[in-house]
Each structure stands twice: as C-alpha cells, then as structure tokens.
Length: 115
Length: 112
Image (tube, rainbow over the protein chains, first blue to last red):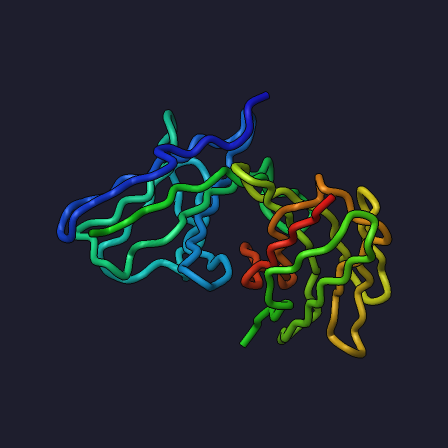
C-alpha cells in the first residue's frame, strides 16, 4: 500500500506564474489536509477536504490560493500569480476518517521556490 | 492563541546518549498532544501521542508524558541510535478541530 504521494517534489516558478501541487492520498483515504511550512517555522494548517468538498479552509490565504479534491484523481493545491513569499514546503496528509482518533499520514512534501 | 513551542535545534548526540527534546504548549481547551518524526527524504510519521493529562505515549523507545500542570510534552529516549537521526515535530490538536498545530521542528543528529 503506497503512502501519500506528492508531486512534484521540487517546483520552481517565476513570479506571476501558477503553481499546481498534487497529492494522492493513501488507498482508502477520503480525507486530505494541506499544510505549509515557511522557512524557520512549523507546519501551518491550510485546508481540509473530503471528496469533492472543502470542510475547513480557515488557514488558506484569501486570494490566489485554492484547493480541490475531485471524485476521481488527486487533490490539487493551486497558487495563482505566485510571489516570493509563497516559497515554502507544502505537505499533504490523508486519513481514513476525520477527527482526533484517526492517524493522518503525511507525504514527503513539495518544495516550491519562487524566483 | 493555540501554539506549540519546542526546543530549537539542531541537537547532536553521540550514540547511546540520553535524549530530551522539550515541548510546551498553549491551548484554549484540553488538547491531544503528538510527536511526529520526519526521516531524511520521507514524510512526517506519527511517533506517539497522548490524549489526556498524565497519559504517557511511547513507541520505538521514545516516551513523552502529558503534563497539564506544566503544559509540557517533552520527548525522551534513554539511548539514541544513529537511525534516530531525523527532524522531530511536537503538535497539538484541540477537541473537535480538524487540524494539528505544529512546533518548528528539532533536527537531531546522532553520531557513531
């Protein structure tokens, strides 16, 4: 059973371009979480999705960022018109159920560099 | 607000040394507490957790006790190995919440 797969592992974008980060959850997992780790900081929650639904996006910046988790295919975190401050490691996690008693499994992360 | 503060790294220890990584938290309610580990080139893995005061989480020789009076959840291991070299993250989750609050991570390097 493959773990949480994120791609690409490294992504370089110029300012103003779009970045698309993909996350394939573990088999049988229908809950996906995205976190961002800025340099020298801890991981910060961005968004929580179940299949086709955004459950909690309280950590998402209000502009330029969006996330989806379609019925088929991976979850996508999309950043439009990237700026230097978007440079960070973006981690995806998945779980079988939501809530405290369900372990979340993390991917290896995508390191985004904006030049 | 809710937050986690953990010991700054990096930490370098010799094999078989005793390890402590400090973690303290601030929370509005009664959180559950976690330690995650990230080995080189891999994603974060849950190492151990504790869901209420005085609980002790343990796994792979690591332990941490949920101390409500000192709002702490320090990670300890009696004898580290080279294979324990990794980044360790302390985290909390509030009851009813959907997300984890993480500390900044502590990089541990164990030398032979």
